[in-house]
Image 1: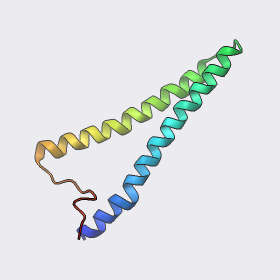
Image 2: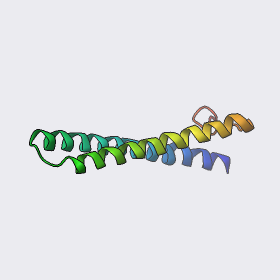
Image 3: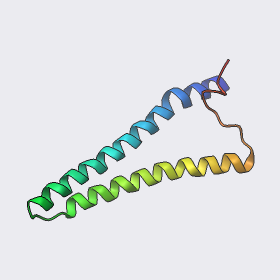
Length: 88
């Protein structure tokens, strides 16, 4: 059973988290480009600002979750499941 959990975490969960992080970063960059384009044209930059803010919020949530998980693991001495611990 622990091999199954290990495979699920390393093969499915970790790539999904990386994909979500990349998506939040791309969303931020999209907002930055939109902000720069509308500010150069003298238009309303509110939409670009909102995209940038929500991209940063997404990244903070993702990296905050990693921080909380590492804090709990360090505090309670839990052995994390990772590629090094999954060796058969």
